[in-house]
Image (cartoon, rainbow, N blue to C red; front, side, top):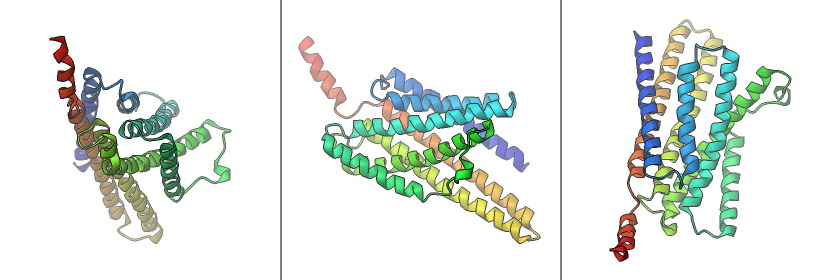
Length: 268
């Protein structure tokens, strides 16, 4: 009964997520936001494609080629995610002097890089081999995991910077760059929190089985339930972010309508 309820919850979340992604893509294209945020549009499209691949290909093709496809898409997601951060930052801080842009970017990368350096375990030299397909996939998966952490850290930092300093560069409240940054940072916080808890639960599971407690099986099932609920909560936050983007990207930025009206008056 519990398994079926978890499966239903996953199916509902998948449906909501995919539907929201499709609506957001329609808004981006229909409201002509693609020209302004091409990499953000690409990120949403890639996420939807990844979601479709997981559902349509799992159980229908061999495990090794399936892993090759999914892990490759994970690495592409990291690359596109980094480009999204650059894109939103350029839109939010348009007009910033090049020297200040370089200095702030360098400082942001140093801070997030230091945090990433102390985030979780890293591979040893003996793990960094390319002699087999499995080894290459392992390295690619590790790069995707660390890359996702880096993207999450950058989006959280960018969201804070845009909220605090965006008004000085015409990216105040209700501007599209700020709304995208707020959504990205919210998803980033949820991902980082979930990752910290997942790592802690994994350590707890190892300690339980090492201790040989008589109720180890029950504790393990309880931890699995917590991890499942945590994953669902993270996905739900992503759905809320998609809805947030749909609403704010559908709307015109403050002052846009007034500018359009002013431009149309001489024609009449």
